[in-house]
Image 1: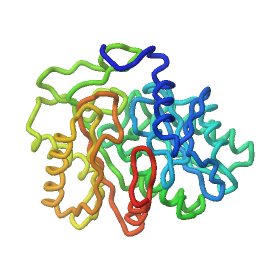
Image 2: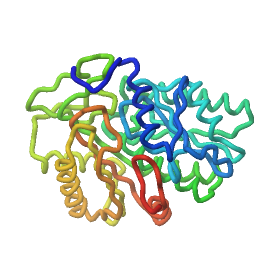
Image 3: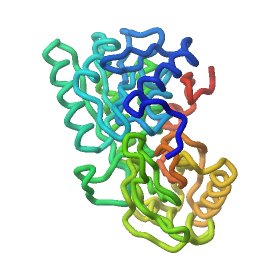
Image 4: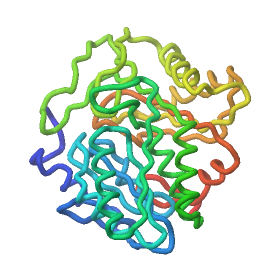
Length: 333
């Protein structure tokens, strides 16, 4: 294993120190328990939006803390859920009378620990609610989660509910936006190579030189099937079909297309795949009205991509276009 690290046990804390040094104008980092908050936190006249999960998926979630997106992010160890006390610390550091919304990926540890933290916050008379995202079409269930996993749609959800909170929506309205997004976003991912977790020191699964893992998760889980390597046209067509047929998306739909690098795929290949996906969607009469391309939810150094489609409407388009200023996503400021 070759990685730019020191002690595997310290990799998350050392990475957070780098984040704090690079973006002191945008975020503050607290340790033991680890959590990242906006530099101007608490912003107590608005609903707080908080998310988190295992590290190794950066810039999710810590790179999305800032105006127009997250008020706080709670990083756990690599591919491991943060503890309830860390989530509770983030809630306490950011949440005022308007309350907070927790954005939770559908993994058993995340769901349980964020729910526990919300219950602890309720004991302090804070209105804290959770919305669980489960956009992965690859699985109905897995050993890592009860039901579908939360994957690329999480990035879009965090942006949209962050914008709703920033414009002054109350907690009921922010939660309504979140649940609408969860209901109309779908994702699929593929891997050309597995990730290597620092403390494990070996790849998460074995993959032959001419094999692709189709339907992977973001924690190094193998996919729903192993297929022979194929052209980009064929692979992206397979991915688009899996996502479009699931909701289903149909002719006349306006969508946001998010083409994501899993960490090890270069921009050249990611943009190539995005162009194919746009063409295939146009062939189906589906209009891509908003786009995001790049490594925004990763799995360490995994080579691969994911595709996420969100059915758009006028309100979601307005929220997507609203200003955002975070370490890893910014426009309109």
